Image 1 (spheres, rainbow, N blue to C red):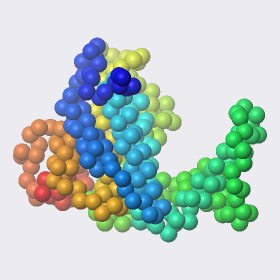
Image 2 (tube, rainbow, N blue to C red):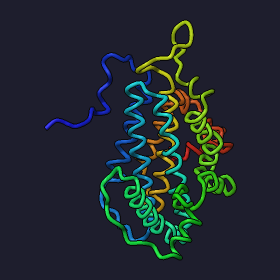
Image 3 (cartoon, one colour):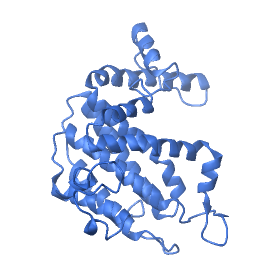
Image 4 (spheres, one colour):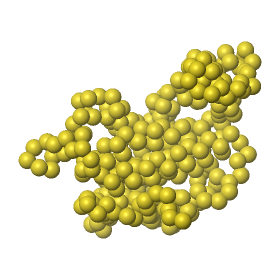
Length: 297
């Protein structure tokens, strides 16, 4: 039986792929995360365990989707996936720090949305009635509306993603906190502009590979490298949360894998000429040895 999807190692024959080094490093990282870290059973005794596992899976699957889009030359569409990827990273990290809130809100949010969904299907008349889930008590429904909004429009955490991410800006307890803070300043607004602002989103759709700007219908080189670069960084951040939650050690192989991806985007000679006490080129303000260089320890 043939594979249902085209594998990532099949380069499009009609598209001269310009980012083979970066793509190959991302693909190795994806494979390592899926088959060396996430594969296998995990005991999930708490709601926080469930949340961290599911949000990590969401991030990794989205990263794989970004690589497929990037491989086919749809970098702008790949960039659009960075927002749910970033939000899943923030949710996993926030949940780990707020286990009491997770236990109270996560299951209630699920039941609340199931009730809203069943009600909406029934009232629309467009879809088959799926029956009525167990109704919430008046007290639970009032609490759910207060936390999640009348239409369930807010996150199960009851907070906006900006509010949750702001914690990492204020705490800055680790290099990962600093990177999440920087993503809040750059990635989140950038992707929002991409999705909602014609000023930036239309500009990102243009290729400048010929004599002037060209709107390309189909694959192009636009935004491919940026999407992969931000994507792998977010994947590493959520894996750090995951391994900490389940008491796993990153190990030298994953550390080396992460460092190799980072170096692939920075250039082959960067690490060779970089001292451990030099400022990290990611501009976190930390020394290389305590930031991205900690993966080479």
